[in-house]
Image (cartoon, rainbow, N blue to C red; front, side, top):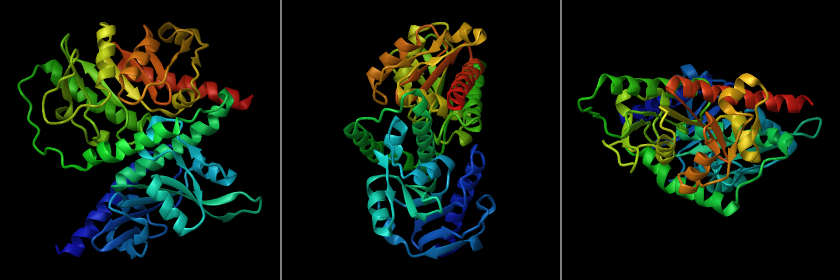
Length: 403
C-alpha cells in the first residue's frame, strides 16, 4: 500500500466509524459531510454518501485548505434540529455549560462567507454558516464543527446541538445563564492545550493486570458495560461523563480520561485510592475522580457513582434551577426535588464541595452549568437513577412547554 492509498484508507475508516456513531444519535443530522486534512490534501465525503458504509470511491479531494490549521484537521457539516432552529431565528448559542465552553468555545456565531467561516473556526470549534433565507425570512444553512480529529469534530457537533436545545428549553425555567466569558475562554484554552492533546497521544497498547479478585474483575466488566449503556441511552456526548465503583474501603475503580466508551474494556479501568486519589497503572483516571472519592467518603453505603451530561438535566443546570419531583415513588429516593449544586469549575474543589453538599443523602443531584451525578448500591442502581432523573426532567420541561 503506497502513501496515497494509506491516507485515503485511513480517512475512510475514520469517516465510517463516525458515521456509525451518528446512527446512535436520537435525532437527524441531515445530509452530513466530513472533511479530513491529510497529506493528499483535504479529503471530503461526497454529497449523499451513506457514511456508515462509505467506500474509497465516496471520497474526493477538495480545495478548502484555508479552513484548516495545525490545531484543526477535521470538519463536520451537519443540519441537526435545534441548531437549525437557532440558525432560522438568527440566534447565536452562548456557552451555558462547561462542556460547550471546553469543546466548542465561548459561543457559536452565525457567519455568511468563507472568510468569516475561517475566522470563526480559529476562535471556536463550532458556528453556523448561513447561505440564505427561506420564504418566511428564516435563515437556512449548516452547522460547522471542527476538531483535531474527526471524532472530536463529531463530539463538538453533539455538544453544540445539546447546547442549542438547552438554551431553547431553559426559557420555560427563566432562561439559561451564560458562563462568564473569560472563564469560558480559559476553559477552552485549557482544553485545547491539555485535554485535547492528551487524547491525541498514543495510549499504551499493552495493558497488563496484576492478580485480582473475582469481585474486581466483575466490577471492571460492569463499568465497561454501563459506559456503553450511557452512550446507547444518549446520557453522554463523546467521552464526557464518568463512572466509578467502590472496590473496598480503600480503593475505587474509575473510568479513564478521554477514551471512547464503546471500546472500553475492563482492563482500561483505573484503580484509585479513595482518600488521596493516587492511582495505579499508565492510564490516567477521569479528572472528576475527586468528586467520586468525596461521595464515597461521605456516603459509606454508596457503592457506585455515575456522572452524566444528559440533556434534560443540563437544562436545569444551565438555568440553575432545582428539578421538582412530584411523584411519591420518585420522592422515596430523590426527595421532593433534585437539588442543583452551586457552580464550581470543572475538576475544582469547589465543584466537589458544592456537589457533595447538594447531593446530601439523596440518590442524585444536578451540577450547575455542568451535568448531573447519581449514586446507588451498585452500578445498575446508579445507572437506573441517571435514567430516572433524566426522565423526570424531560417530563417536567415538556409539561411546561405545553402550558
